[in-house]
Length: 340
Ligand code: SF4
Image 1 (cartoon, rainbow, N blue to C red):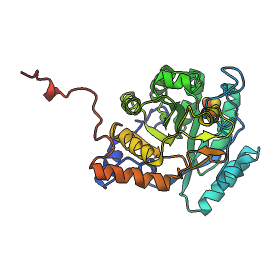
Image 2: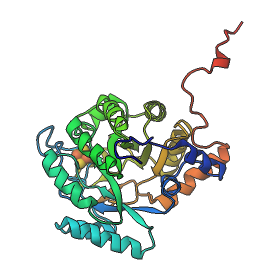
Image 3: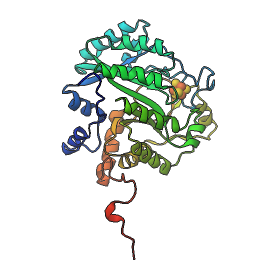
Image 4: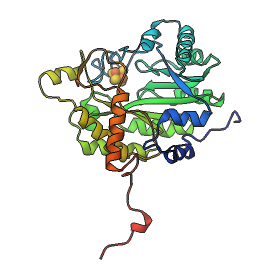
C-alpha cells in the first residue's frame, strides 16, 4: 500500500467467505485472519486514562453501569497490565499471549477508561510507545464518541499512513437518546455518527459496544439499534448483557427493585434478535461479557462467551436464521408495486 493511500475499511468479500464456510454470524477473529493471512491477538494496555464522565468535566457520577473508572481486572492477563512502564506492558503481554499460542501479531487494545482523553501531544507519546514493537500491527482504542476531535483522528490517520491498522471502540451502548440519558452517558448518537464518517474518511475501523437489557429499553428499541448502527456502516460490535456492578448507580436501582437484569434465556433470545436485524457485514467481536467481572452483583448466570455464544447460535439454528436474516431497510425495487 502506498503511504498516502486510504484502504477500504471492512472487506465484505472476506465476510461473505465466512458465511460460505458455514458461519451463522461474522466472527471478527476469523475475519482478521483472512485479511492478514495469520492469527491476530489483542493485548490489553493500561495507560492510566481517566474519564470526563467521572472527573467532573461532564459529570462526577459516571455511567450508571460503570464500575469506578472501568478498571476491574478479572483475567490474570488483565491484572498483569498494572505496571506503569508502557513498553514493558507491551513486551510482557506479547510474551504472555504468544506463550499461550494466541497468534503471530498483536493489536494493542488501549482498554481502561476513556483512552483519548488527553492532549494530542501526550496521546502521540503513548500511542507511539504502544506501536513500537515489531509484533504490533496496530491499535484498538476504547473511548467515548465525544472525545475524538479532528486533531486526534488526524493523529490516528498518520499511523494508518505508516501501514498500521487502527480501530476505535466506542461505548455507544444504544442509539436511543432516552436510554443514553437514563444511563448518564452525557452524549447522544450524533457524536457517533460524526465519528463513523470522519474515521472512515481516514481509513479507521469503528466498533460499537452495545449493551442489551439497559433500564427502560424495550426489545423493539434494541432491534432498532441493530438496524441503525448497520445503516451508518459501523464495522464491528461487541454485545454485552447489562451487568449490575458493585458501587454503581445501577446497584441502587437493583436493590430497590426498580431494575431487573435479563435472564440468561432472555439475553440469548434478544442477542439472536439483534443479530438477525444487524447487517450481515458487521463483524461480531464479542457476544457476551467475560472479563472485568470482579464485583458483579447481578445477573447470577454465567455470562462467559463460551457459554452464551453457543446458546445464541442454537436459537438462530432452531429459528433457521442467521446474522442479517431480518435486516432490511425499506422496500426493494421489486416491491415498489402498489397493492390493489
Ligand atoms: S464513559 Fe466509560 S469509563 Fe467513563 S463513566 Fe462511562 S463507562 Fe465509565
